[in-house]
Length: 253
Length: 253
DNA sequence: GCCTAATTCAAGCAATTGCTTCAATCAAGC
DNA sequence: GCTTGATTGAAGCAATTGCTTGAATTAGGC
Image 1 (cartoon, protein in one colour):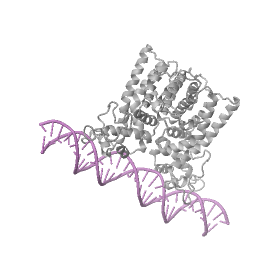
Image 2: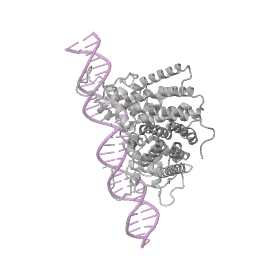
Image 3: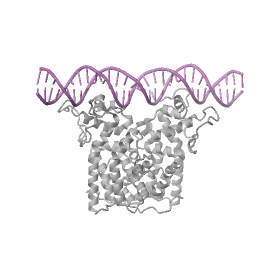
Image 4: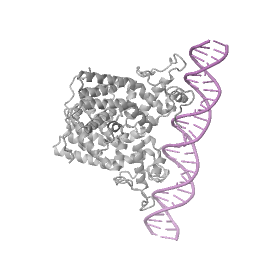
C-alpha cells in the first residue's frame, strides 16, 4: 500500500506554491546560523524541496534516498513523508513549484506572438516563446538545478519519473504542438512530429547539461550558458523548422 | 572493494565480441525448448547480455537488479558476476558489443564522404555518416532495444552509467566533432559547440523513444520508425547545420 | 500558563540491493 | 572412467531502501 492518504498528514495538498524556497533563486548557499525565523524549522517543506531538486538533478531520482534528501535539508526522514506522502509526490512537488511560473510565462509569450501576427504566428516566435523561458531558468542557481532535473528526467526510464513527467508536461506540450502546427501549415502531421522531436530533444539535452560535449570541446563551453543557447541553439532550431518540406522520395540510397 | 579481480573468474576479459546474442538480431522471441546446444547453458553470457540490454533500456540501469537480469536470462545471479564481475561492467559489455560494429560503420561512411569530396566533406554527408547507422539499428528488435538504452543513458545521472557512457563514446565523439568542424569552417568553435549539442540531443531523444511525443500526436507516429527519422529528422538537422552563422548582435530583446 | 493541533524526532520494519561463498555439475582430455 | 578446470546453483551477508510508528516538541489561540 504505497499510497498513504490516512491520518492527519497534510501531505501534498499545498501544491501550487509560487517560486519560494530557501535558496531557490537567491544568490544560493543561504545557509548557516540565521534560519529558523518564524516557527522552529517552519520552512522545512521548502528546504526539502530545495534539497530534493538539487539531489534529484545531480544524482537522479533512483539514486537518491529520502534519507539523503532529509539530511541535506537538515530535516528528518519522517518530515519528508509527512509533508509529501511519498518520494514520487515529492518529485512531483518539485516540478510543480517551478512549472507554474514557467508555463504561465510561456503562454503569455505565445499569446503575444499570436496576437501580434494576427492569428498565424511565425514559427521562430513560437519556438522562442516555449524555449526561452526554460533556458533563462539557468540564469539563477536554483533554476539551473531544476533544468538539470527536468532535462535528465525527460528520458528517465523509472516508471515513477515517467508518470510525473508525462502528467506535469501534458497541457503545455499540447499547446506547443498546436501552436507549431498553426505556424507551419505546409508541414504534414508526420513531418511536424519529427521536427518537434528534434526541437524537444535538443532543448532537453541542453537543459540536462551532462558534460559530455563540454569534455570534447573544453571547459570554456557550457550548455548552462544561457546567452550561447539563445544566440546559437535557438536559431539552429528555427532554421530547421523553416526548412522546406521533405521531398516525396525518401533519400535512402 | 567493489572491484573483484581476484581468483579464477574470467570476468569481462572476453570483451569486443561481434554482434552475437541469442535473439540479438533474429526475429526476436527465439526462446523455448531447443536451447542448450553445445555445452549446458553454453551461451549464458550472451543471454545475460541480451537480458541486460533489454531491461536496462526499458527500466533504467538503477531500476534493474542483477537478480532480475539473471532471471530473465534463465541464469543465476552468480553467473552474472562470474562473467562480468560487476553490474557496471555488465552495462559496459552491453555497450561494447553493439558499438564495435556501429563505430566501424560510421568511420567507413565518414572516410567515404571525405574521400568523395576531396578532403572537405559536405556537412549533410557527415551527419548522415554518424546518424544513419545508429538510427538503422532500430530496424531490428535487438538494435531497437539497444537504442532505447543508449538514448536514455545519454542523460542518465547515475555515476556508473555516466562513467560508462563517457568512456565508451569518447573516441567516436571526437571523430564526429572533428569531421563537423572540417565541414563547417565558417562556424566559430562556440557556434559549432551549440549546433552539435542540438544534433546530439535530437538524435539521443529519438533513440530514447520515451513515448511522450507519441502520446501527443497519436499512436500512428513512433520515434522508432527508421524511415521517418531518416526522411524528416535528418534533413531538419542538416538544415540547421547549413544555416548561416549567427549575427554578431545577440537576438535578446 | 494551559490546550490543541501541527510538526519533528529516534527507532524500527520488511523488502531489496550488489556481491560472495562454497559445493555441485558439466564437458572434455587422457 | 577419472581427472581437471570452467561454469552454475542455493544460500547467505551486510547495507540500504521507502515508509511507518508512537512518543516528544513546538507554537499560537485562549
